[in-house]
Structure formats: C-alpha cells, structure tokens
Image (cartoon, rainbow, N blue to C red; front, top):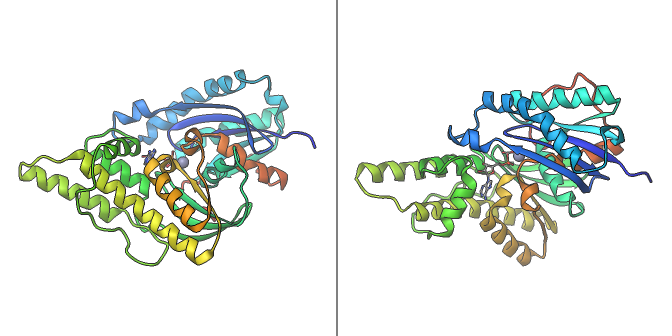
Length: 335
Ligand code: KG4
Ligand code: ZN
C-alpha cells in the first residue's frame, strides 16, 4: 500500500504547531512555536494575543516543518487541522490556514477534535489496541472514557467544575509561580512534603471529578496565613495539593479498572507530563495487570503530530470536511 502523508495544523490555544505524519504513526517532522514567554507575563493565556501570535508565526512554523524533510506540500495526501475545542480566535487561524492549503493544493481537508488528538498522541510511538480506558487530563478537560474502537467513545465521567490542569495553574498563581503552573507545582512538590490537610475532591464512587473546592481551600490557606502574618511553606503546600489532585485521578481510574476489567490505560493531555501521576498510575497498572500508555513529553502537551495521528483513521474512512469548516470552542470526546 502507498504511504499516506498528512500535514497537520494545531493552533487551539497558545502553541502554533505543524507536523507531517506518515501512515498515522511516524512523525516525520514536527515544529512547535510556543507563546509561553509572552502569556506568562499576564499570568495566563490572553486570547487576543494568542490569535495574533498564531497569525504572525504560522507561516514560519510551516517553513520550519517542511525544511526538516525532503517532502513538499504537493506530496501530502491530506491537510488536517484542529477545529474544536479551544479558543475561538486561535482555532480560526489554524482552520483558515489549513483550508487555504487544502484549496490551493487540491488536498482533502480533515477536521480533528483536539481531545481525540491527545489520545492519538499514544499512537505515534505505540499502537492503540481496543478496548481501552482513556484518561484526558489537560488545562481544559478531565475526562475518563472507554474507547471501544477508533473514534468510538463511551464517556464514564468528567469534571463537575474546574479541569485538573486549570486547578494546577490557579494554585500555582496563588503560590507565586508563572503560567503554566503544572511544571512549577511539580518541581516545588519534589522539594516538599505532604503536610497540609486538604479536602478530597469528590469522595464518591462515580467517575466524576471536581477541583474547585480543592483549589479554593489552597487559596484560603494562603490568604488566612498571610492575614495572620505567618509564612507559607510553598513546597509543602504544592506537594499537598499535587498529592490530593493526582490521587483523586488515580482513585477514579482504579474504580474503572475494577468495574470494566479493561487491561489498557491511555493517558493524554498536558497533565500527563506529571511524573507523580505517571508513577502512581504505573503502580496501579501493575496491580491490575494493565498496560499503561503515556506519550513522550513532547507529545503530551499541545502539538500537531497528535492531530496528524488522529486524522489518519478519518482519512481511511474518507471523512473529509469542506471549505465551510468552522471552529467550535466547546466539545468533549463524544461530541
Ligand atoms: O494539553 P495541554 O498542553 O493544553 C490543553 O489542551 O489544555 O495542557 C496544558 C495543561 C496546563 O494546565 C498545564 O499546567 C498542565 O497541562 N501541565 C501540567 C504539567 N505540565 C503541563 N500539570 C501538572 N504537571 C505537569 N508536569
Ligand atoms: Zn491540549
């Protein structure tokens, strides 16, 4: 069979990324332009600045991606792009760019759900085998679902309020760290101990998550200690927060492993870069004789390679979009 090359575009938040993926698995070239330095000055992603920077960077990212290979756009079999969920203005830059390429070079256009992209990041250096449990833990989502086959999801649970990554970012801010907060909390936690008593998010047997109460409790501790003139042990508070936040994920995954008897767990989204989460899931999966998939760091956070990998099954089904493809700010795995 002929090799299939997909050029994929990702611009849903604050990373402008373009990749070329061969046969849904091999990442031939990946370029990412991060805007973190700019947004961290504001304590979070500023949507207006993000879309403007995507506009400024996207052509250079394409040039860089192509320069790492001998391939040209003419050699591509399709153009794929993230069209949901994400920041409207950011998504639109990538979508219009991808549509223009598809039109000019007469290539099929494939629309990819960013969350499904995170799951298919695991298909880049591994092979997804079904059925599997899919855990998406990112800045915007905390979802646990069963994936029965390519693109067939059954949602088990989701967050009732904040996403786990969002709570890492908000807690980091109140502890004095810059955006994105996840890596700073993780580093601080390594130097600290679990000494602060924090409430467990949702102490029940459902698959749902909740992070706003935990986040508020950390903010309350910081404020009340400040008012009393006491200092905070930032490393210990970061460690206590991370322990509760991650242990809750692990507890829910354990319920799912027990109830479903599924033997494969795929972890996706930016928070999957967290080593404490990885270690705890490794222990859990050993206990249940379950195979654990976590992508390499570069494929954990936002990148276009995962979008190319997720576009491949759609290419095989000829599930193409026309030039009216529009952005959708909200979506979960099934919608
Ligand atoms: O998937 P992603 O790159 O973007 C979204 O689609 O949201 O995830 C970004 C989120 C941020 O909230 C960031 O703080 C979190 O992932 N994150 C981490 C770590 N690295 C990134 N959270 C915990 N530990 C980390 N090492
Ligand atoms: Zn993401």
